[in-house]
Image 1: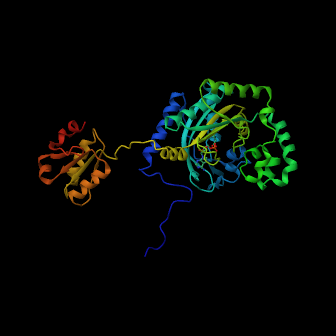
Image 2 (image 1 turned 135 degrees about the vertical axis):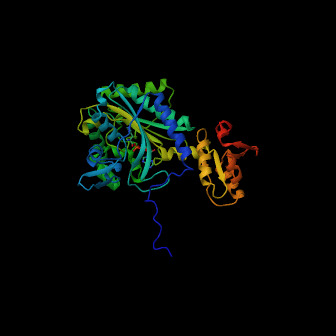
Length: 418
Ligand code: HAM
């Protein structure tokens, strides 16, 4: 009897197994390719940050208030596992003096994020994002540029059928007055809202528009819309973004209720969904402009815009629409030595590795069983090695597809396999 149950993975996190990786790798390569085509450079930031960095930029959002993995290290520092990348990338932009280089800094990052939410399909506690940021420019052309990157990436992966929701939420100049209008509209309805919304009414009323709870829905239609209350600059930027998207042939759906879950946004916000769904839980990507974020982190005021897309959801959707990813075999050549020929087999493998990926089957089993494994593994060749051939420094090289088998001296193997 085992002494205890085997220890399983932590709830809400998962392994990406070798069988999953070809699809993930294809998604990562497509991301790297599109980022490069748009002139974006890779950045890697730590998985842990000061909790304050995250908390300062999003006090009232779920990703921060309820979902943050927060802990104290042995030195008593209050740290957090990053729930998203933007706050850390903006910090790194200043600490790494990217603000002194030509602007904007065009950056991308691929890596894990952590949110303590209720796990379900497409929602995990550790998930991966492609994060793209253009920092140091307020030009609406960059809003359109990052949107084009998101759409192009999904398109390159065979996900052309998506819906993009687009909105603006104004800035520090026009939003406060609009929020007062929103509060004034919702205050008489307070008792009819669900608990979180009652609280948000005073702290962050914009989130009321984003609420998905049924009891709060009837009041949205008559709520004042920010697009009717933009300052001149925000209105001009909003018109420019739409003009640029039109010119680039990128379709969008104007959604006056789209506000996004994180506090730091200004002006443009957008989310991308699979075309078929009207859901809110299954966004493939989301982002927007965050001109107040740098200042909220304590750095000089600096505009920025970007988006992040969840690789878990994107790869699940690529699988669902049936895009075929052809996986290379783990090893193209499999060496099958007879018993006690490990040293010779290792030398043969070493020679073949000059030109091909090679594995050796060291298991003590019949040749028939070894050939079955070679087939399953998808090897293109097997190298049969018996004691007599080893003495002569030759092998039998068998091509799996044709079944052709020839004797080959060890030193000729690279030429035969090239
Ligand atoms: P976000 O909307 O919180 O934005 O997340 C972006 C994407 O990450 C979502 O659309 C979704 O695909 C994926 N995602 C989020 N949470 C989970 C989860 N629990 N499990 C699986 N996938 C998930 C941000 O994170 C912003 N930092 C985006 C941004 C960058 N804005 C400006 N720059």
